[in-house]
Image 1 (cartoon, rainbow, N blue to C red):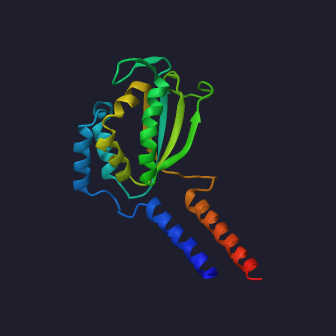
Image 2: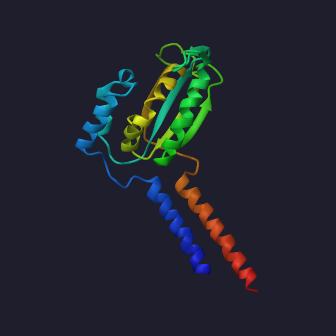
Image 3: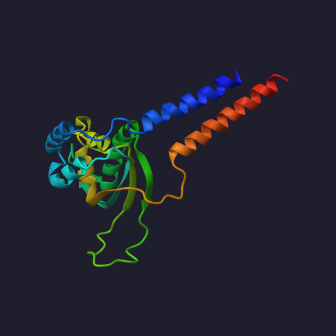
Length: 209
């Protein structure tokens, strides 16, 4: 019984890694062409530099990355993409996020940090004026394949207009983590499973006395 508890914990952790990590390797050239063709047909196609996206995909190393997103949310009322009714820009963004986040998590991604801006630039060198950023988000992606698959998922075709309507200004760029002082999911999931197995181990021993 005790052995079964620890085996179950190990199997659960391995299943987590099977979902959380990319096991398919870097993108293949044929995949890149297929995804770029799909991206050209998306509502957001005109908002992105295709050459930058292509270069990022062609340099795929198969590893995870964190996308840094700076967003200025429309503070006033904007036309609803479907009804045309004046709607708060923040509601447009929330509607998009409610659809996007579950799909991101299903592909092993998740928010690493999401923060609300509370002041203007306190240190700025040779940059334009602060446009009035609203939020900054650090989104972990399992792979570049997962990112472009999400960006070209036809299921989001009807929701992208809400993101566009609710966004006054934004830019995003991918990063590779160099220093992290907080525990990532690989470790804390392992610790949680180990704790659960240890408690079950103790409970079994106590019941046998």
